[in-house]
Amino acid sequence: MPRAQWFALTLALTLSACGNSPGNGFPDMTEPVITTVPAGSSSSGSSSSSSSGTEHGSTSTTSSSGGAASSDGSGGPKLDMPVPDGGDAPPVGCNGKIDFLFAVSASGTMKNQQEQLIASFPGFIAAIQDQLPDFDVHILSAAAHPGWAIQDCSVCTDSCDPQGAEPLCGASITPCDKGKVGAGVTFPTGTGASNRRCPLYGGNRYIISGEPEMEEMFDCIARVGISWDGWVAEAMVKALDPVMNGPGGCNKGFLRDDALLVVVLIEDTYDQISEGTPETWIEALRAAKHGDDDAFAVLALTTDVDDPLCEGKCIPWDCNQTKNPLRLLVEGVKHGFIGGICEPSFTPFFADAVGHIVELCDSFVIPQ
Image 1 (cartoon, rainbow, N blue to C red):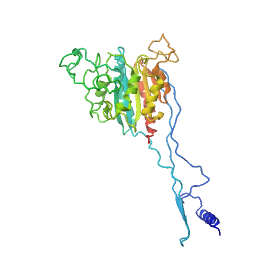
Image 2: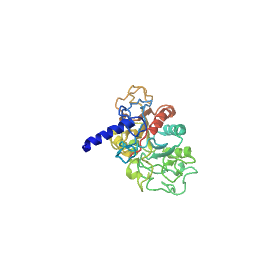
Image 3: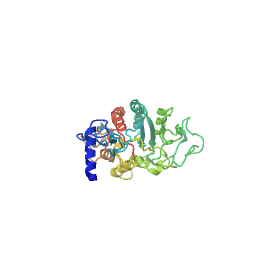
Image 4: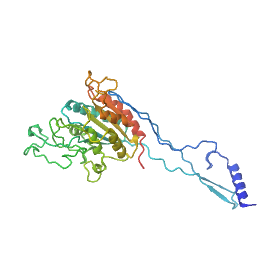
């Protein structure tokens, strides 16, 4: 018998004997093949005083194993027919790791807004932690202006560095404290600022898990004062720069590949000072997270005079149909949330975002 006919006959007999039942090493040829498909979702819009998000699926995988068919053991031919292996599924979930990047304007009208942010922070973080038992957090407050000075030593408190001559009042500063937009703030200065070094646990320019005084330290780094015009979008972009996060950078180690990134921008006016455009800001976010639109979210609290429905609370009698660049940024990302900075409390805005953040964390895919 020719070799090809012999092989076909042997294979037919083997399959007939084994059948297509589960566990015999052969897939059921009548069943569809299940492959791994990354979860995805559609873009979501947002309104001036409420946040919106998207529903996310989860990644599922099915693995198959190979099998071998042989003769009755009498030394006949043995057929090894492994089913192709689709490879390991990509890791799913951020395992509680979230990098929070705050950029807070220090303009002259931001005193109350900074107080509201600081007051709402504990509940925001606690609500996320309650749903992520392995919560592993980085929290950075990016400098949104290049200034650094204590113009009047009388603003110093007992915990400041009051000794010495103006304008530094004897404070010990580093190159990352002065003129570095995007660098993590650990010594906010100016009117209404902390005006002291924030002694963060771990020695970084950002808060990490294990910080014994997390609420107090967030108060310290987020109380940036009201002495400078701010450009929060530019602060975000520069804070995410690879050089800034690399060895020797001011924010060394802040941005982690295996963590979800959550950006919080707070500015009570249009951001018309920041370098770049909403499109370039979005590209910087995507570059930081390896092109994965599901690996980051942007939360913005800003003026609502450009509320599409003209229902803003900041200037009720005025409605500006020219959109704030920050609104364009939020609308341009897949997971964007915008709230009115003139709301009496930021707590509802952050509470509404918690579920979306946890959901993104659960469906996060670590880049390979």
